[in-house]
Length: 405
Image (tube, rainbow, N blue to C red; front, side):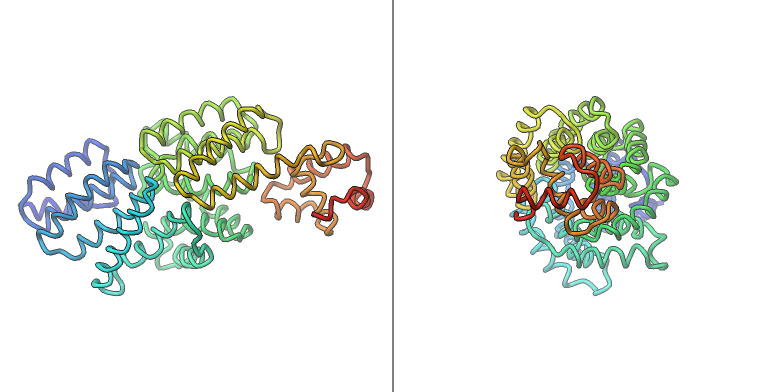
């Protein structure tokens, strides 16, 4: 067959190794027919971003794709290139460049039909990533992705898996913890059954693992550790975030294995640096600091240094939501010596919830921790302040002014 016939065999959702993707790029540079050239560029770009997490390489190749789209007068190709460029710039922490590319993408996408897939990608997926930089409407994003993920028409398609990955995460960011847990319970067994080479499988492990980490869903940690380890052992990159090692580190920390967590945080740090993903690199430092301080004694000096490093990076990158996270945690940690009977900031938080009448299960939900962790906090509080029940604990809190702040 001719170039067109060959190009039609290139399916964006098919698995390709980095070497096979390089061969597709070579075809895009050698072919002459517009349809064939543009399809090869498009397939290669998606491989680089969503299969291999090779964001700098994708950004470089997008310039070729855009020039080809302009040369052949293809608005869809130009729009695709600008949308994907905006995504790449955001993943690299180049926020102004991402916003400029997004504006150009919006202008081009507006010239396409209202049902074109790029409308969703431009309006929602880029906004999703920009949430690391500025406030976004997480509730709106959560509503959209959850609707797509649970729709019988789209839920079983590749779009459905993408939406499910995003729905779990955006429900968490929107503060809908119960819904995030419900969707996580649906997503996890699906990921465990799918082949590793499924399109955006690695994105699901990243998003699901992030939700497990932030919810402190200890029971799910071994499952996501296993998923991420399978990807690492198969030499399949996390993408679009280079996060497989980070997922293993987070899950090890939740499971109480600080030695393994330390090893994989180091791997995650190197992976983020090699990929040029500065926002992710800063998050690695923040997460390792959390691993050393949450619910267990750790290396306070190293945790402090990591918090300081993360804060400096978040400020340099102008990642305001993450900067606020660090400041909030540092503020809590700094306040610890002021609490009586060596109560930790988290224990005081639990005590205040008890005073509001919260059950252990409600405490767990409020703090996004497991029920076992909430019960352990309550037991530790009783032991430290010498009380036997909730009424005595609340009285202690009143006597020591812990309910005023």
